[in-house]
Image 1: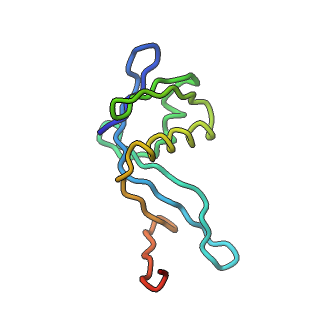
Image 2: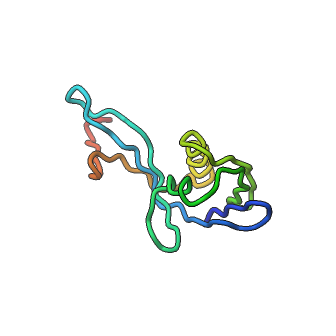
Image 3: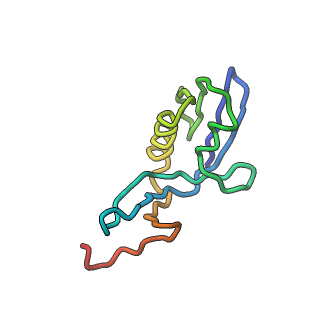
Amino acid sequence: MSVQLYLEDVQVLEFVPVEFRRVHLLKDEKLKYSHSELIVTINNHRVLVDIMLTLLDNATYQFKINGLEFLTALNNLDSLQRVKHLVFINFPDLPVSDVYCNQVLQVSSDAF
């Protein structure tokens, strides 16, 4: 399944969500959640969804996801949070990983 973006009824971008990453940083000798990244493929290349701010003009786009339509402005990092949220709620089975320094963290069974 893919996400299509339209501007004035013209498709300007299509991407396929691949993975969510919860990025952690070391603070006070403990791992702390920092931010989330959404990895997508555009033209068969894995990139962060943040690239949309570079590829597209500041405007309000129509997102078509799983037969649903959403209007969303793309103009700053806060607007990317909405895009990530739209993908998260429309692709509930998308893999999610916790990472530190690009390494996937393994959760111990003792944590539960």
